[in-house]
Image (tube, rainbow, N blue to C red; front, side, top):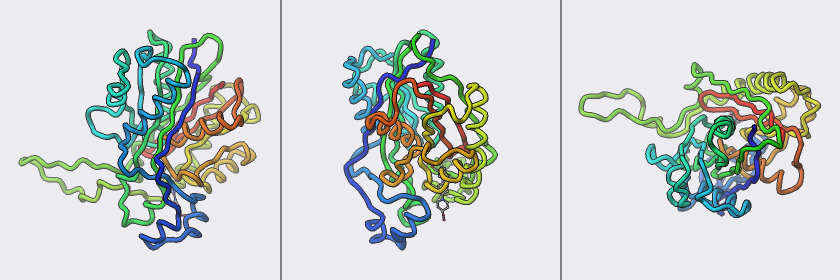
Length: 323
Ligand SMILES: O=C(O)C1CCN(c2ccc(-c3cc(CO)ccc3Cl)cn2)CC1
């Protein structure tokens, strides 16, 4: 028994902000952003919340599969930018979808969130459940300090997801490697919830609401731990790296993907990329990349894929997927 990805979908808000648009409101340039990150533009919400982006993807997945909402057993939303602490973004989607039979919950593993969520869905399908939605959805624009150019230029809003079903036909997730490096968590933070009772005092600076990142430290972490993660999952899957048709990595930074390809001595062409169009959309980046590659015919059935996420936590996670 295994997990089959039956449908893929993605959605991004209509508002496009180019690097030149950002140069109008902060001291930066298209040259700096493009050369250091590979990003040319990003999509930013105007009046949509994270649950709205996730709901649109959920509706697309049901429509593609000709399924009714009540046929869903679960909805998992991977997000680090939920509408609320409670209700979960997944619960909001479940309610608006009228998917009354589906258990629904969020998971937060930042940019590894979609990979963690796929692995969790695999376990649910090994149990009493038949099918569900796994969605990565982010509105990072609400977590950005728009006065801080070092982070404001990196991120975008978006959502992507998959319909997963119990299957006896495909191998699905052949192996997984989900790692957390909590001792490095302070290197990438956002959304601190300050203590505020009459009995507490909180010396954490209030600006911890917004993204803060030790870019050098996270960059170095990624270029070392992502190759390690991919090597481990290849061994667990008993795959050789040449068996893999495509590598779908979190779209954090174009130079990081090149560095990881070099570390692994794998041709860069095997690493799919769309960071130029969307920026870093955290948990949404891999499912957006997956849907685009399926739609364009780059990814075909029965191919061997490696999906990898890395970032906040810090986390690094990989899945060997027989698509
Ligand atoms: O070249 C420069 O000056 C800078 C150097 C630092 N850079 C970075 C550093 C880290 C990330 C990053 C972020 C996340 C969060 O999702 C996850 C994973 C990563 Cl590897 C993205 N960019 C940008 C260009």
